[in-house]
Image (cartoon, rainbow, N blue to C red; front, side, top):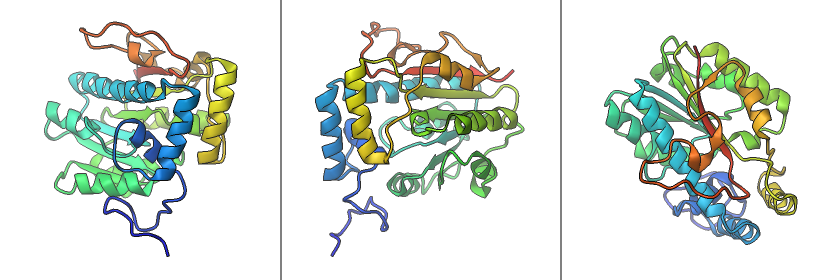
Length: 270
């Protein structure tokens, strides 16, 4: 008999199968994870001790990017692969800048969607949708997405630490083409991506661990490959930069770049 699940878990999940969203939640210090997720995280940390620091840097980039976009006047956010809610969520930052800012979270993990919906139960300008972010046309045409997001107006599409799950380069290129074709001029796309530029031995061992979770190792891309995906979108300053070095808070010193650090950037459609 399957043990009783905590109230934050969806009824149809198997707590013996690790989830990338729950592993990430654990690395960020969250509680919505199982022993199998913590075991995977421990193996990752054994290989590269800086993994939790990189997870936190990625989350901090998301928060800084949303703050920048809200200050630029964007009031619609589509968060693809949003993950499990934690402190400093997109809707909290966006709606602090404008109470009627619209936010739609998309995730394939049922725990992420269940927890997001509970958090947003009284928020009429934000929702969570269960879906595969690689199926771009289905996401862009989803009734709940269309209910809140008006693609005739500028929108910010967030793709934070998700593209390494897309192994098919042709699919990744098609996803970006569809997004660029759909979003209105003045829209933005914010992304972060794990890099393939770390020490080969460590990276190979790390890929073996992630393969045990997803069935395939992560697709790590170079800076040039990420730039190709952006196409004719124009990067805002400072361009495609290491995670913690993208518009750091003024009182922060620039950190040393570590093996697992990825690239981050925000690009605008003219």
